[in-house]
Image (tube, rainbow, N blue to C red; front, side, top):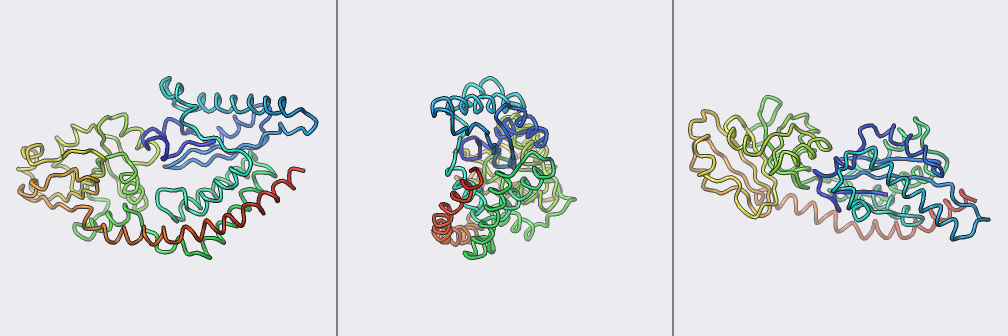
Length: 348
């Protein structure tokens, strides 16, 4: 059962997340019929893997399916009770979450571990997150023979696929390239005051790169709730959007990564606050379409960079990854039946 960046905005994922993943696993295990639980929780997903003991071969299919349905409902109810979901989210909960069973679970986990179902195709980060989730569950005792076997097998197969295809070799994200260019042009260190405008996928990639480099930054979005939700699960310090623009002069570096279909930064909007600024400001706009009007370059000390200046490097990396995907999918197609048989033997 999962919610990911593919079906809810990133800033909303924090509502589905658990403050304490280990404690959440323990709560799920308290549900009658749930034997094991592993949770993968990252900046792009919240996924719950459970093993139900409602597999009594002597029970009629209808009764067994009814029991499974009751367990599933209790899992959903527990998820709601442990998260920050509001009534409006709860009303759409069933339409939001994805539920997998049997072979679909194995296929999904293989794709995830291989790097086919993440922000950046092939990124090793998701593989490491799966490995860490398994280790934490083992240490806490919330996983057991079934999930341990499944995750151990998938991790081994994913490592094999990654090595055989080279899908994780030289992987770079849009955030990696944008931050690297900014660093080259203006220097990027802990002393710089950094602002990130946006809370979508591109903004998340920038944020993750800044996190990796241990660079502090503020986050602003159209609403403070969005900025807060994004910061909770990705990072950064949420600030009010209008306050950020009104105080733009205090920032040395501004990353703009929005999906707005109009200019959010223009000469007229920032003229008064920027005219008196003594130090320069570098603005990196990686939005599609552009969200920063070029007319701001007439202001003193403003240096403006656009996505076009990193597009070739980034697009080549994406193209290289996509070219390898069919080879990975072919291996998964071959390994999935073997994994399924292995898991079935474990259950019998």
